[in-house]
Image 1 (cartoon, rainbow over the protein chains, first blue to last red):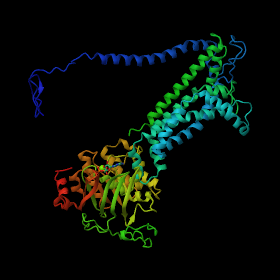
Image 2 (cartoon, protein in one colour):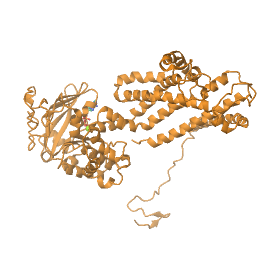
Image 3 (tube, rainbow over the protein chains, first blue to last red):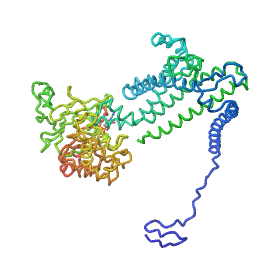
Image 4 (spheres, each protein chain N blue to C red):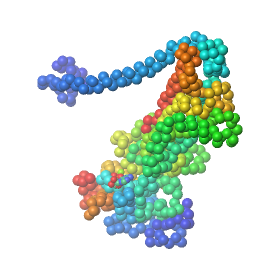
Length: 327
Length: 299
Ligand SMILES: Nc1ncnc2c1ncn2[C@@H]1O[C@H](COP(=O)(O)OP(=O)(O)O)[C@@H](O)[C@H]1O
Ligand SMILES: [Mg+2]
């Protein structure tokens, strides 16, 4: 390659055509394209608005939460094992205990119970629909799942209180009408459709070529599903389960109805115990005057829920990245 | 491997179950269009009046041919003439296509693989397949190769050794021996395809089916796979579908030319037009349609 240059310092063209010497071509826009600019402006403001709303929510939590923590130490809040926010004098901070742990453990316990129900059933349904069901069966069941995912949660709450608890009562020896196990199980059934539907999407997206490769090596359907399709879809399946966890943690009606209103620091799922959302529902629907301790407690619990869901989402993003397969 | 009750495809005696299968005795009547396969009288696989339907659509019909042991047989023809369809019958991959139906017989050592007592897993372990687009599993290189032996429950005393031999067999060992635990997706397209070949030979098959294995690869990777095929043919029986006629001419000993012509009802059904030694097909084809195709005047 010669680096000899000619006219205007261009490198020698070698075997290539020489520089263009005719009149220049006009490649500037031939119309102002206003429509496109408007569309872009609308889309940018839509994106900005959703970010602003989120920021606004966090900001509006901030002041009452700060007020709450001038009365209650962070240590007492996070590690205290007794929660009596609605007891005693409405406007007195000092005759109450502010340990949030009972609410947190009840939330986690019910979430855990719901996952024990939802993960096997949800994944089983997803595997069946994606790998075993005929296209016709899938066409019928997939929409049903999606409709089930939209049943109002108050319905599930009453199902727990009036059907599941009476069934479990003699079997497990539950005292009273409230327990954690009953709303936990029902909540599990509530999130089965979410997990099943999203996992099925993830598994159906696994290319047919991978399944064929597996069958061609002599694998049967179960082996192909477990060893090839499932791992290939893992990131989507993890995302589905995490969404299920988020729904369980944030679920309010079922626990408000069937877990009772008694904050109780216990690991016994047969006992009723108030969850974080259960407390919010109770305090927000009772007469909680603005500026009272329990009013500020609402915000503190709300902020804690926010942080917990945020953490779960961050963990899930990491997991999804870790298991993402580019196929 | 002989189960006494297995059907033989000694065609005239198909109903006579008392005739114990002696695998290599495959006699077939040949249709007029297909001359006897010289030098391969008892092919590893023999097709007898093969006919395949997708629901109501007859994709191929009247295919009679035999694949010689440790030979490379190429199936060529214009696209849509049923080459892949025929290939998929050879290890029952058509079972996976809803609505697909196979008539006639596919005799593997004289046993009809579509027979009643045949276990499809046994068939596929002996007759492996490599696909058009490399399709490694989203697993490590090692686990890809070990997959077949694991799922088929092969009794393997030393899996490392099986994996190494398969990778050496596919001419991939030197390139991957230091990264066996890495994900197979990190390999180039050509390496992935050789990995798929390694994966196929790990179950020690007798036959390897390849459906346009190079069509997604660049010329250098293609040349490597072609060299590899020639080498593998000293151990394995290879049947390759290709639309690259130079490739068929370079690697194969025998070539079958398919075409699909519309019948009076306007249905296009694939047929085997000519099946002979590659030398004959490319040097002195008997059928005018074969000649037109290989000289590039049609298809
Ligand atoms: N899964 C299928 N379902 C329905 N028709 C199919 C299917 N696969 C192939 N066919 C049809 O069968 C004929 C032969 O196809 P194919 O075997 O793929 O041809 P080739 O490999 O020679 O291009 C074509 O007309 C094609 O449309
Ligand atoms: Mg094809």
